[in-house]
Amino acid sequence: MKNLYNLLKKEYGKLGKWWPGTSTEILITAILTQNTNWKNVEKAMENIYKFTTKDNLLFFLYDTPKEKLAEIIKPAGFFNIKAERIKNLLNFLKKRNFNLKYVEKEPNLREKLLKIKGIGKETADSILLYAFEFPIFVVDAYTKRLLKRIYGLNIEDYDKIQELFHKNYPKDTRLYQEFHGLIVEHAKKYCRKKPLCSKCFFGKKCNYLTSPLRTY
Ligand code: SF4
Image 1: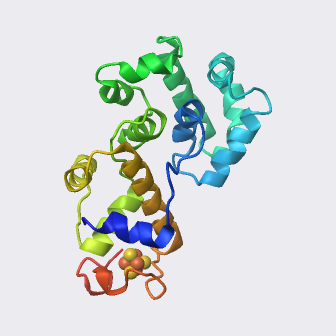
Image 2: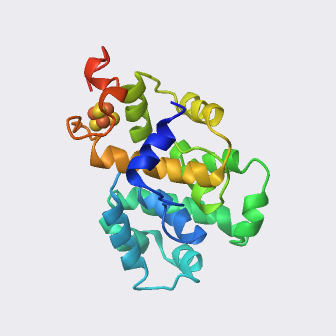
């Protein structure tokens, strides 16, 4: 577990922050990326930018009626739900004058984000880590899969997995940003739903082939 970051980094190199875009864009892409791939997120963002500029992004989305917004973000899938979730987040930001510098200093920001309908732990932590640069580890389905397969750790609980990373690695924003990216890249390249173990560099370092948990 302690060497996971180094092993992944050795293979995939320096990914840096990994999540693209400005803080403002990340607030929106964190919702758009729910249950879809990044290409669809990009298409939805391209559609948005047919109507506005980067500087005006949040104001435009706030002023756009929900139905129209759903139409614009259609490529991201689940567009009605996502339009509503974006609106919920924008209402939260509007109450703070869309001032992200102010928002990031707000006490208990994570708890407040989690109270917004449609913002779960993964989305809230993605916003905190990548938009506001808090040292908080993002857990996703890929993270759970890797822990299960490589280390035989069958943990479903989000908080417990997050705690494991927080305990085993220094609380470092850049490290957590890159680490989450490395996990996603690995899960997409080799550790897919149907894993490509014969090609994977983990080889015998991975428990999967001998694990009694090998039912996934
Ligand atoms: S060896 Fe297979 S199960 Fe293990 S990390 Fe690689 S792809 Fe995943």
